[in-house]
Length: 214
Image 1 (cartoon, one colour):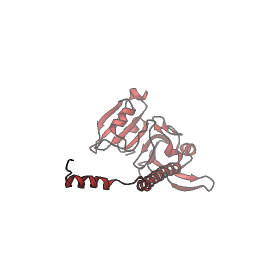
Image 2 (spheres, rainbow, N blue to C red):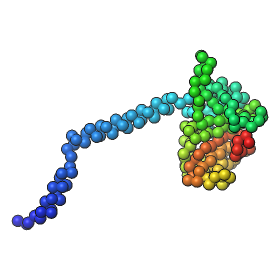
Image 3 (cartoon, one colour):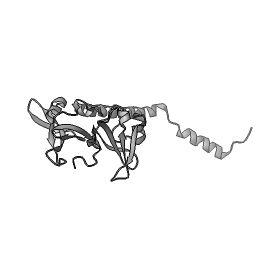
Image 4 (cartoon, one colour):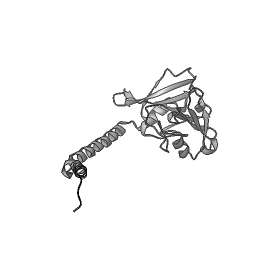
C-alpha cells in the first residue's frame, strides 16, 4: 500500500474543512435576494415619484408635451407644472424658467423639479437644457452619464465632435443631415472622460449658445 504523507493528509483535511453544508448557505442566499428585491423596489418607488415631465423624452421636437414656440404659460398648461424665472435670465427678451410641481386644487407649488431649464426668447420656448440630477433621456436612452460612444451609437455616428471651449471635454452636436432640419438640433457636453455632463435641444443657433442667455 502506498504511503500517504502527513502534508497530503493535512491539505485534504483543510479542503474538506472549507466546505459548508447547503443549509448554512441558504440564509445568505435569501438575504442577498431580499436585498436585490429591496433595491428594485426603491428604483420603482423613485420612478413613480417622478413628475411626468421627468419621465418624458427630449428630442429636436421638444420635451414631452412642451414644444418649441410655446409661451411659458402654454408650456405650464401642457406639462401641468408651474414655472419660476431664474437668475440665469439676462434680459426681458431672454429668460430661463425652472419647472415646479403644482397642486391645481390648492393652487400652490409643492416641490421643485431638478435639472430642467427652459430658455424663453421673445416670449417663446426655444431651448430646453437638461442638467446634472435630471433623469430625462432621449428616445435613444441617452442621458446624464452616458458615454460619447453611446451617444454616437444612438445617432448612427452623426454627431459632430468639437472641443469644449472651457473644459477638457467635448461638444457633440447632431448634424442637420441626421436631424433632417437646419432649424433644430441636440447638443451634448462631456467631461474629459467622455461622459455626458449636460445636454440640450432647441432651435438654432440658440441651442449652440455656450453660456445660455449670456
